[in-house]
Length: 259
Length: 340
Image (tube, rainbow over all chains, first blue to last red; front, side):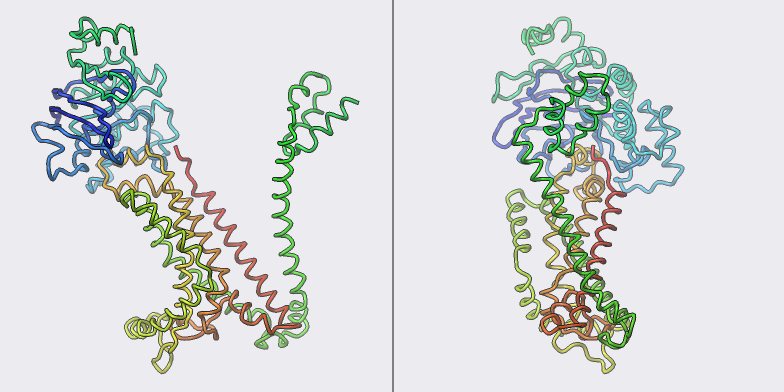
């Protein structure tokens, strides 16, 4: 259960402002793809179009196609709710539901699908998701305590557990480590490595070393100037991007000459 | 000499701990000097103004309570010496309790009717309505709050006449529920000026308060929480249930309690609409009375002991409102969540 994503001629707008222009990309199943680039280049925006979270922002719109195993998620009659049930998302800041316990947080997405869970099924699923997020051993004795009582890194892994509990096809991560310390970051990166056995993972990161460590392929986005749309400059094997990129712009960015 | 100027300078700033902590470590001469902040005249004026405002509110509240207590001493004396002097001839308690019940019932009905509507309107304007419509709708709701209660009273009288048919229907089909029971001869109030009509008008009067307060709270729902729910594949309603309502729970309670406070004390509209009478369980026949309306209707001709009685009744209302507010505080303190 993992899908291939084909992005074709994707333009993204905020109102009349063209934020991202003409993205073409093919993301293979069971791989980790990193989006890198300077702030404002549209990498998070592109990520958010992959589960139709972009359109939650008033005035936002999209043209072009995003195909999941050949089905356009922007096709006529596609319900964004169903898209989001197949494409999980982890945000920049950990956002467990503050009123829910750890266990309820993990099960939140499953309960949305109106599936009736017996207690033992719920327990199994909680354990499986928390183990999947490398959090089980740390929280197994306090599953009924509020999720907001965990540390920042644990909360972020709880959010990952919540996202994978619904068994999505694709997992999107929007700078998941930007608010975490190095130890917690390492834990998340290890986890991403495990997750790609089952899911298609797309991660936005500001940290180029992180992109180099976790991803198979890397997409570099850049922006010509303020008010100009962001563009996909290069999409290549991560090893190529960081050793011998095709484009000079990429070379300048990864070597630290700007950005 | 320098020490005395220090204390006089830091004295008026009051609320800070500067004076005490300045005196605690006398051995270290540098410590107090570091702690003593420079006081600007503007700060001093502002701090004095807020202090006066804060004290004034307590003084006024205490003044009202003292006035009510002092004026009700005649009633208490009469109650002890000869209860039959009190209106109704059976002592103060049997005079006041139907009024208390009438007040509580009307406020409760108003709350039960208004709260779901208010929450619905607030959710609609914050999360459902098209962006151009929402502010206009919010403006209209706020306008409802600005309508004087006399006008509500007039409107309520007009409404009452049109409700008689509905009350007849209610008593016919739901008469087995005591609150909708018809009179012994099967009739309901001919004028429609019953406690139910008054309660319905009250509910519309408290609607804007609850709506605007809950709307402000719903607007403050952390965007991250809403997105967390949506990204899990929540529909709009599921998102509201997962993120918006839990976050706003304590705010909803306090908004409702403010509405309840207004419903308990609302006088003019009830006094105009309700044709008062003895306490009856049924809300569709004439009868019942609320405290505020009882005071308003009898005060102009009252003198002597009767006047004292009415003021004592006012004291009872004062206590009820105080209890409701304290209860609301307790609930809010218990249910509030830390937003992240």
